Image (cartoon, rainbow, N blue to C red):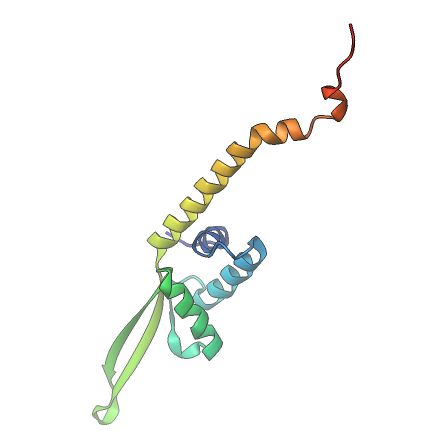
Length: 127
């Protein structure tokens, strides 16, 4: 399964209700730029601000981190930290957002019909 911009945008709007659509889209694009076509990215390419954003997403279970150790020359240990997209959680958040959006649209549909009627429709005329 691939995470696309729309799915991640919806997931961010569900996980962070204070995000507007514009901020969610920008954040989704920002995150996906690190991952490309992979489901992970290496931590050492991140700046401090990037890492702060990743930790915020980790708190919502949208990302997770994993560390590996490798022995290099002279017996030294090299630690590799990777960030992974939690595709199942992203899909869950996205589906939740879509269901809520559908529910809001369904709830507003009858109201919007009446709101769009001309005031003349409500005037009484004598027969």
